[in-house]
Length: 155
Image (cartoon, rainbow, N blue to C red):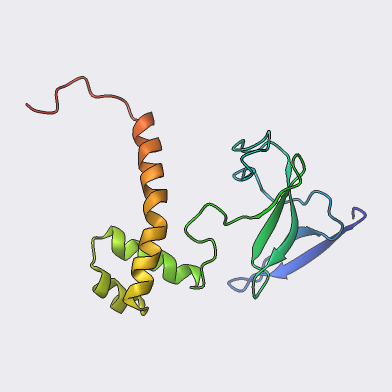
């Protein structure tokens, strides 16, 4: 076992198998997959570079310590793993937010979505306004990588 790390065994609830995850209690690099994250500080030299090896988990937060607080070694900036997403600062459970977005994607109205998810209609409007710019940015990036059609759009 490495010094400074504690190997924690958690029991899966669905089966009798065990898995291990290493947690760090000293501020050094943690054996967690951080390749999909990048520094959120726009003045950092590693801003927007995924899997640059500059991020570590410095702490966890939330009622059950379910969210990670990331630390950039380049600029010494700390930020949540949820920063830059519609889930940043969300008070609803993740499953309710995902259900809300699925109903909106299926073109349900605001009132019907609120009734199906079990939240106020103002909450549906709030989350839809949060997700709108993210959906627009995703759409623009996705369309930029799609191949152009040589045919005329009007036949």
